[in-house]
Length: 71
Image (cartoon, rainbow, N blue to C red):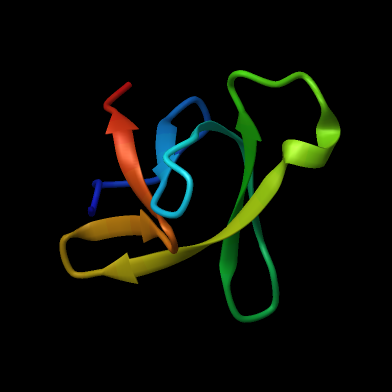
């Protein structure tokens, strides 16, 4: 699902597991942008994930995730 802009604090749901993650930060690599995600039901750092930000005409989305809630 596409949102206008991916930003810190948004909640995204994994398409594989259904687990909900919050965007903690965004950063740019040489050729792409990435979002760092933290699981909301776990305090452990091993559940942190990185997702590529895909840009489209209508906005942005995260590969493998759908927006869980608009903030």
